[in-house]
Image (cartoon, rainbow, N blue to C red; front, side, top):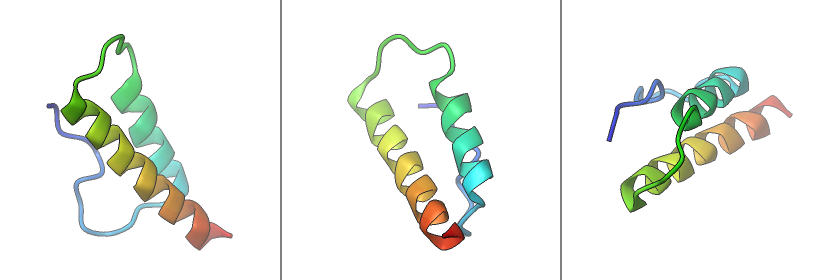
Length: 54
């Protein structure tokens, strides 16, 4: 599994989290269980950032 931008322990901005998701899913056609787990992790970070923003 390739590393993602959001491996830092701090919570990024919603924009940074969204960009990390976009980069992670770009040009993917099939997903392993590990890749889906990473996508879920990135989405959770994005949701947290969205909640902090509101």
